[in-house]
Image (cartoon, rainbow, N blue to C red):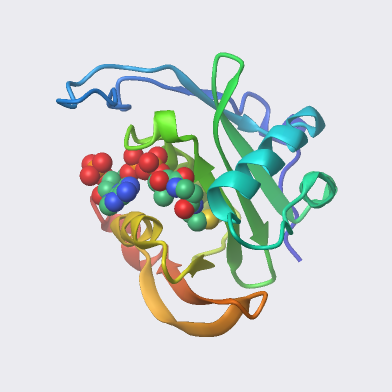
Length: 190
Ligand SMILES: CC(C)(COP(=O)(O)OP(=O)(O)OC[C@H]1O[C@@H](n2cnc3c(N)ncnc32)[C@H](O)[C@@H]1OP(=O)(O)O)[C@@H](O)C(=O)NCCC(=O)NCCS
């Protein structure tokens, strides 16, 4: 069973994503925003849970509450990362490493930071982490009605791999998506 490296094992994990982030202006002029990717800490759990509630689970029962996020943070098979703009939480992602694949549980970017490359930066970091761990298959489920997220994941190398009826509390279907990091290793999007 794979265990994610601890912050200590990662050493200097934090990276500053700069110049690759497009400023989200009306005419989408190129600019830069300093976004720092880091392993999440326990103190980040309330803000992550709030984002999960408002951006991912809206209209559904709240399953990704603070307690569940804290459980992931303590689970050596989960990686929880944050994208921070100074002290502001711009985004986060949670990936669970299973025996032969990884499951991307959640990923979200605050509305004011969307379409700047923050989601891509987090996903690329997770891809890199998975490859390092020798895990080349990543799965996820996304709400069938979330066309934006489906487009985002397709852009980042995922393909749609079937439907899961009533996956969300029996109320809404999910689309299962999969990404083969081995196959996509040479893709320009990655
Ligand atoms: C989906 C989401 C994570 C994308 O994050 P993001 O940081 O805005 O995405 P990026 O800027 O890295 O986009 C990378 C590429 O994905 C595609 N993409 C991203 N958002 C898109 C959208 N709303 N519509 C169509 N394509 C989109 C584009 O091809 C984009 O490249 P481009 O901007 O050069 O055209 C973000 O919109 C979000 O948090 N949504 C709410 C929560 C959610 O749905 N999470 C996913 C389910 S857990």
